[in-house]
Image 1 (cartoon, one colour):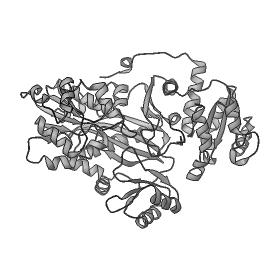
Image 2: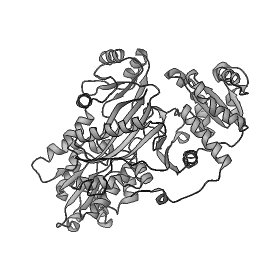
Image 3: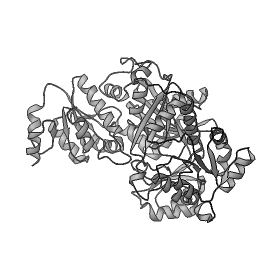
Image 4: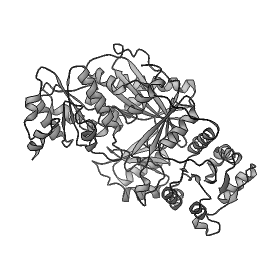
Length: 550
């Protein structure tokens, strides 16, 4: 059946048929790109984008480009882009079968996310003594970035700050590490995709529950424990390097505090709160880490800034899911450049002689979530990725870019009506100005008892409403159903129990398709976007008009 299907489908190949033997141009070199695997949360189509751009770069260089990817999206959108596409499982055995059949000269693992990177070490061992090489960064250097102990040793050698951390192989070991570095801690299983199983824990009791219910800890499957930096600014940095020079493609600032998965976070390019000193330090860290790992191709860094100090969270020795976003915002095709470097080009030869160039406009990445279609799922954002897509808002004006991103993601910000405010004590001063803006724009402000008292003391008239657990009238949920409340600003306290208490409120907001803002920074951004829409006309420009450098 596979051979019959292959005969009727000129660009689709399996290892069962023979059709690619007759189409393989033996005079051209052949490079295989390993894709990201099946579509699932945490392994999105951003990697398909990178694979397709890599194909284009290979073909421009006169190289036969072959993709291995068992992803229906790849078949539906780019089945005829590559010279051949193998719809095969991304296991070592299947990849080696394709390599043998194609007699490939090289393999690229940097564009398939964690799935392809996990194959790098085994591929290098299996291909030892053959003509086929893993192109770009060596698998050993990839392992330095992936292995917690080797990476920590490298950061210490480079003098780069990193949160205290440890690896636990049992509950007792995990407990000892968590108590040594101090709660809260960020914990996750080793070698996971999309932050699956990653949580922020605030006590030994929560750690016990996590170990008993969320993961199976063993000598082969440890848990990774990091000190959690509360209220830190998180950054994503994407770079390309040829082993000698480094080009920082973009520095993105998360709107949410560190602890929300980068796939879910709202991001701003360029960063809006970093000082010049911190920006220069981020660029310096990116260059030093790329050169220390001898990166040839792509690399992504995740950093945190707290109290004017930069902390290393992790490094991914590959293209990240933010590469398409940065490439579109800046006009610099990072995946194509990374591929050209893997083929032997240098950054200087490609015209990238500057280490970093800030754009003169703003690009906002906003995530799209499937909560409406997943009954019972809590909409609070955590270190575990939940989004299934993303959009971009772009403009010379930051607030207009924010508004464009909001409407593109399907968030219908109200222009009038009522806003329900219930925030933790630490966030009350942070949301004060944006709530005042709403009040002055004529919105009716509803708030829980504590928040209402705070707002009234600061000159904002409010109506006190109650939660389900308080069992008093009027209740916020009743006002939401009646249409009196059109938007919610709710920042839970830093305790998982408090986060769970607002579950019913968040679920109702999802079902009513009502904007629900769970961070102070997110609330500020949304309110600024409302003010923009009420006072300005939006303009539209093509993406190319924003590309000030090529």
